[in-house]
Image 1: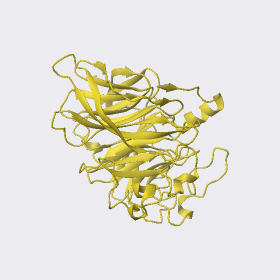
Image 2: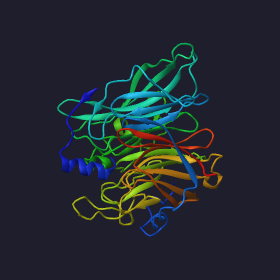
Image 3: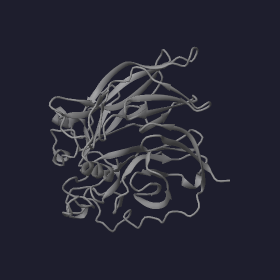
Image 4: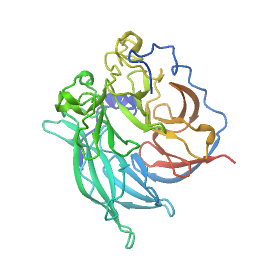
Amino acid sequence: MTVRKYFPAAMVALLFACGQGSSSPQGRPPGAGGDGPTPAPSSSMPFTTTEIARFQEPWAMTFIPDSPYLLVTQKGGKLVLFRISDRSKIEVNGVPAVDYGGQGGLGDIVIGPNRNADGSLPVYLSWVEAGQGDTRGAVVARADLVIDETGDGAAALKQLTIIWRQTPKVTGEGHYSHRIAVSPDGRHIFISSGDRQKFDPAQDMTSNLGKIIRLNTDGSVPQDNPFADQRGTAAQIWSLGHRNGLGLAFDAKGNLWESEMGPAGGDEVNLIQRGANYGWPRVSNGSHYGGEDIPDHGTGAGFTAPLAWWNPSISPGGMAWYGGRMFPQWHDSLLVGALSGKALIRLKIEGADLVKADQWPMQRVREVEVGGDGAIWLLEDGMNARLLKLTPAS
């Protein structure tokens, strides 16, 4: 693990402010749909919250299907295999060295489609690696997770192969994004690639910064990507004009949703469309940190507007689609963790619109997942952060 000094106090404050569907191709002007008032925090919770465990700077989690295990990444560079039944923790071997600092470190972890013939489990994981001249960038790799069920429960990553890199590597320690989602048909992976706080690369087709990336599961570029005929970096791109996407989730219809941090205000949830341009940094429903205005989405011809946005900011983190049994009243909703907003937020999908339905006060919520039984699991942000399980209130 490479460790560097953190930013000066003023920059740390800025990083924490950052958190540390289908609109028309032209976008929709503010005033339509999901920009309505945020619901007031509920005075009573419709769920019981149970603390399950604690982790050090957790960033992501995923359930291993048909098993008692949960995988949790810790930003400092550890991958933990957590056995839910007895709440034991096993550190997974074979995790690559990460460039830890600011918003960087070990990132997302998702399960790939189909077990391997030897019983190992394909996984995709992301982290930040160092480059030359004080530069760095996110990478995504495929690996096989091997769990020794007959012995002491040891676990390791084998055959780890990097299949994607942010290009170019740049200076700074923010806006990596590097969330991963596997398509419902198991044929493709999608990656959120942040703008790395460099603004203009989000509109530059020779860079994969500020984009949503679509790849085959082996890392090759699908022939039907919207810019595949341009070859090079552009061929990877599924959508562009993104700032810092920290949540990716598919719904039951196969639609891909993204939660994205805006500047000072303008946090978004987007329905990701093939080839669409979401406008950053040319348009935003927020403003620059120095107070300078940014044109709204409705004023930028050709830019797709978010279906929900917030001003002031909530700093959206992880996001999950809900279709479970425990909370049937929340079917077809998006559950968004808020970092600076310190909340769990529910957005109801209603046709081509999102409706801000509920907001429950929490601590800083980094990650949201739904268990196989329909329970909702949250990872708080920071050191000694809690893993929480939400079940219906009795």
